[in-house]
Length: 154
Image 1 (tube, rainbow, N blue to C red):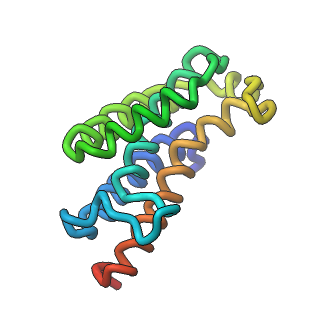
Image 2 (cartoon, helix red, strand yellow):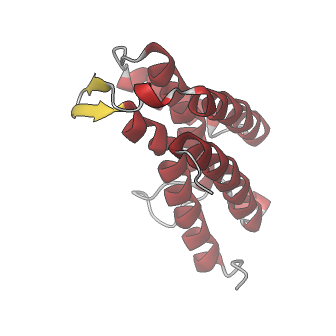
């Protein structure tokens, strides 16, 4: 039985976000806005990134083009979200549902469409993989913070 790329990425993203939330829950409540160094990111900052970028990914996949990205506004919004755990987790869940629906509905013929991004061209298939990849990456980052705190279960 073969599975389409869209099905794999939609299901993988759903599982990855559930695992990301589990990773966040391993962090003690009073350490979710903590980082081990001034240059390190907090767990909630990483959750905020995933929430915002899942929405951006859904938008690019839907429009088949990238709009101008206001990085300063993104950083400001991400910082604000990282200060409100309930809000950022809710946004992560809703934006993930959105990107999963868009990925699952993508026709095969759209997968090879190229989109100009600030760092070069990418196909919609590559862009669709971002929600899954980025979430898995940040799960690892948050689990590393849990290991520093001694709360990572083996």
